[in-house]
Image 1 (tube, one colour):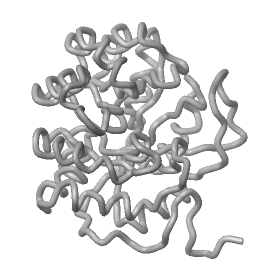
Image 2 (cartoon, helix red, strand yellow):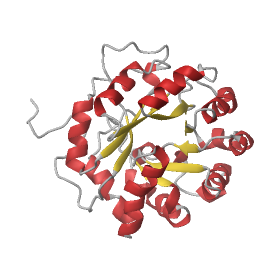
Image 3 (tube, one colour):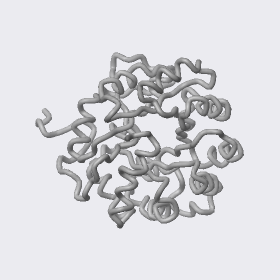
Length: 283
C-alpha cells in the first residue's frame, strides 16, 4: 500500500537540489485513463491522472506543463483536451495528434482551448506515417502550430528535405533519439542543428533513459553539446508517467541532471522557463 507522500510512476520523494525558476514548465507529459478507447495498434497504460501529475509538479517546484497526446489514443484527443480544460490556460498547454486533413475549424477550436502544436510519432507509426509529415506541417502552419516529431535518426535524416521546407517550426522529442557516441557524424545531427540554428527547430531534453535504458546518465556528453551549441532552442520535460522506461525514474533526479548538462544557472533558467514560454506561448 502506497504511503501518502508517494506519487504513482515516479521514484523518490525528495525535491530537486537545483533551484527551479518561477514559470518553469514540464514540456512533456501524458495522462491515461482506462475508460478511454485505445486506438488500433496503441499500447494501453495504467491510469495516470492529472491530479497525480500535479503532485509531481508540486514536488519539483514546476509551475506549468504541456500535455502531449500519446499514440495510445490515436486521433481521439478527448482525454487530453479535458485535462487541458481542467488545468486551465494560465498553467497548461497541449500538443494534440491530428490528421493532415483535419478541418481547420476543429484545429482553431483546439487552439482557442490552448493547443499549440501537433505530434507525429513515427517511432510507433501510430496513427501517422512519414508520408503525413509534409501535408501535416502545411496544415499546422495555417493555425500557427508547431510540429512535434518523435522519430529515429534515420527517419529524421531521410526527412531532411521535407523538414527544411516545412512552413511551421519543428520540435524534436526526446533528444531526437540521437546516438550517444558519434552523434555529430550522424546525418540527423546536421538536420536537427540546421533547423535549431535557423530558429525553426527546438529540442526536448526529455526521456534520457530512452537513449540508453541501462545507463541513463550516458546522455551527458550529448546534452552538454546541445547546451553549448543551441541553449536558446532547448526545453525540458519529465515524460511522466514514463511509458517507455524499463525502470520508473526519480523525476527530481532527472531535473537535477540539468546541473551537469547546463552548469550556468541562467542557462538552466532559460531551458526551464524562458524558452518554453516562447515556444508554448505562456505569458
